Length: 326
Image 1 (tube, rainbow, N blue to C red):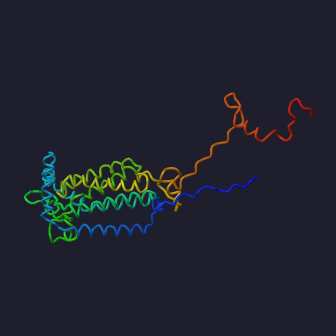
Image 2: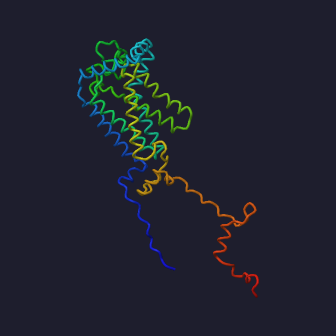
């Protein structure tokens, strides 16, 4: 028997293949990454030049555009909510706190319950925020509460609730760019949270809350005169870019990646998993099909069994063929 040399070509090297494979997140790295990313985000957002005249002109342009569309309803909502003290105060605290609390909560939940999807889904959030920085820098926009010649009510300032940015000497005003209103990351982040919860959570009540969260956030940012509804559209566009980048990088929608990951894999395995040609790490191996029975199937003899017997020849104790002397 002649030995045959194995001519199987090695899998081609794909740049960054290992990085494109979902991996188990490390807590220390994620905490460091989030801290550094938020510091960079805040620095760039606040470094954008406070071009007040441009911001006022852009706000007037947005308002006129919405008015031509028949959808300039922010002032009516703002004045209507102002008459219900308990509601408007609740909305003020909602605006100032849940933006961070819910987003961090969803990140922690993904880290613990969906480690294989954490990295890709976190990438969506980071890209969304990065794209928003471009809008803050090149399109300064005054929020409705700061528009000149308009009678919008700054609900946080009027009710002395924490989080108002309108008072120039306030702590919040000193650490945040007041004219970075387009796009709205309250909507970008809340929609990211809502979609993640609605798709990945199992309890029906959690899915319903996830679906309602961005809708309520939209009502809050309009009622408190912090954003136009077109700012929300800008946040949605940023989020769409985030999902697109994550899909191109990992080869799938982030929510369809394996929930669990067992550990590091080779680049070829990474490519196979992304393309759906291999079982994700941590999944049970496929069960081998049972051997074909040698008995007759549906009244006929199995061809595979007959061919197998013929190739091996007659059994050792079998007699001579018919017609020959024994």
